[in-house]
Image: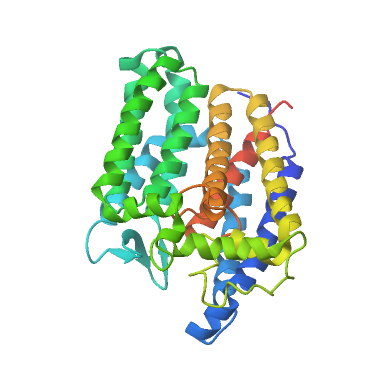
Length: 366
């Protein structure tokens, strides 16, 4: 059994709370106008986000004190429960439809998004599977295929909602973990070609996805339709300049950029705080990833290392996709920015993941 380190990574806690504090401020700033118009309460989204943050912080500190190999014991059960929830969310009357996707299950006045929790469940499951079958991972049939089989089963169920963004993050995180565990590069090349063909098929099967691709390449070809969000996002980022228009002074949040407190919150942040503010966020995420990599490298067993790698990969991929979309470098996918975007399931999941990472840090030799 690994030797326990009494103190978790304090630097990681500071970074997490800094991002969370900035996120709470920006959720209010980005949503106040819309919330006041729709709910007659400018603090509507900010208050809910504070509640989510409170629940997430409690969960983070609670999980920080649960020995991380406990997740190895319960990984199979957790992933099964998440699969069951993915089935439930597809049942009319149980799953709620938002923005064309049946991705939510209502719980009282709140809703949960099972696909978000599947990301963390898959990380725990793969960390267990890969640590127990490391010698087989170089074999396509005995190692790689079973691991990817469970991943793409979950991806398929998420796509039935459909939720390409969340599914992409889960698959990307899983691929990173499998590669780090020792899978052969030639297997990835072969599967990559198959995956590319499958991705093209997914895009071609739904007209709205084709529009998202074409709007990404030339958003001004349909400025009032598929290119609207990207154009409005760029209109927010551009005027921000070096120092921004000032906190609370965004123009695009006045009903130009739809629901700016969610996927496009980085655009509002860049508009109000400028290049300096946007760079600060990128620096904080870079520091978070650096601490996570140090924890993974210093973990005393393979399970803990893969668990940390999975969490860091999930955060990194989600940040890259979100900011890529907001800056017009990638098609719109509907991915939140960790710790900053409004959303209970996403925020809670991220804080739970950090709690697991903090526990790994208590046993890490770095």
